[in-house]
Image (cartoon, rainbow, N blue to C red):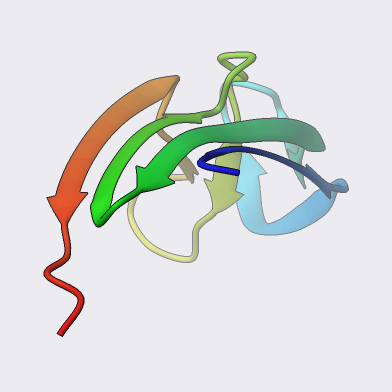
Length: 88
């Protein structure tokens, strides 16, 4: 009862960028697939959580209408969290 697993998948299709990207010579951003996961232990007021974003270390970008032609998004990221609740 105290241990939980969460896995989330996101797919974003091909998108049009406002301007041509010089590195790819096109004005489209490639589609991408992201996988994020969390393992949690929560019992007797103590919560311990390990999160991994972008599990597959996917290289992906967001569109840009400013100076950079596109925005590179974060690579694989691990986060650790510990909490305690008094239960008031």
